[in-house]
Image 1 (cartoon, rainbow, N blue to C red):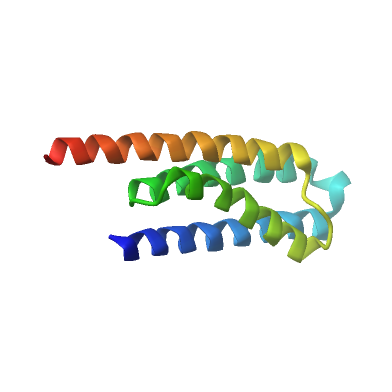
Image 2: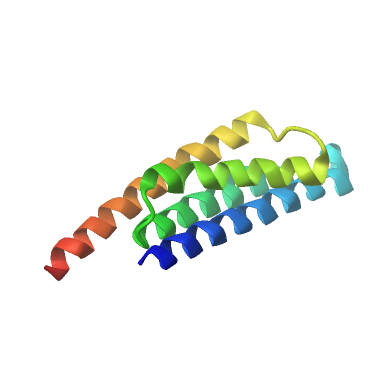
Length: 119
């Protein structure tokens, strides 16, 4: 069980870091003027949805929600910073964090239900 938790958290961190780097590269390669809708979709929909889903999966696999929710947004910010050399957009980062909290909470509730159902 402990091994599943570690793998879930590692996969979550890696996926969000890659997604953050891709979002930053999208903004750097095409510039902010030409692809604002694409960058907006990448930050506000794709990254936020991935953060919520990955936090849910990590919490369902037994990781505590207190570890599952901040890992995704932090890894996304590190990936963005590593690729662009500048801080990520703060509004998008807060939205990703909020949806990660929702996802981790839902994952913890689903894990408790499954545990209760198994008994």
